[in-house]
Length: 285
Image (cartoon, rainbow, N blue to C red; front, top):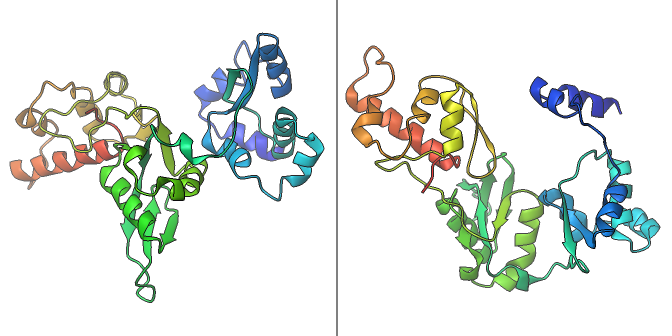
């Protein structure tokens, strides 16, 4: 419980005030919420957060005693995991009818996948191996040429998503895709997000990000459902102006001129900053 308390106190004050200290804060057991949903003909399926589905798709030996104790009752198993792991929040999904949680390859066609990867130098002693690094600095290595080709496609396309329909040998790679999904490395969606990989001549940030930057906020919502922190400088003010109507000469001249800087250097600096913004999922396509 000490760890839970530290985690709560480590949140931003406004989050603590809105959640735990809010006027309407009445925690419920997952089982109780599911019982209320069942009365309306709805069944608990899973959590929207990928890592919460790991035991669904890839049952572990560590959780085998809990599965045995739950005796095939998925909801009861999840409730046991809540108690064991001190999980205090769910983004629960409910469905009508019997839920189907099978890990099958034929569910992947029609989905779009995005994966923030970059290829890094491999071990010279392993010439057939390719190494990739995630945005959270997790390294993955493989000597499977099919996976290497797939990872390179994702690295070149990110933050844009790629259709899994076009992936060769998708059935053979299905378990890898599911693994990347539950580990949080790969995102899956039913439609591609409207994202730009580069700033272009008329950069366009989302309406929400422009509103946040106009207020002087530093933590901005991205189009990949993440949060981008702008540490400082004129980029915060610049973002509020990225409404898709301004051409390159306009936004390149925004911001203070530093001693020794030239127009060309400033233009290059802004271009690099905005392209980094695009790679973080901050600009619309």
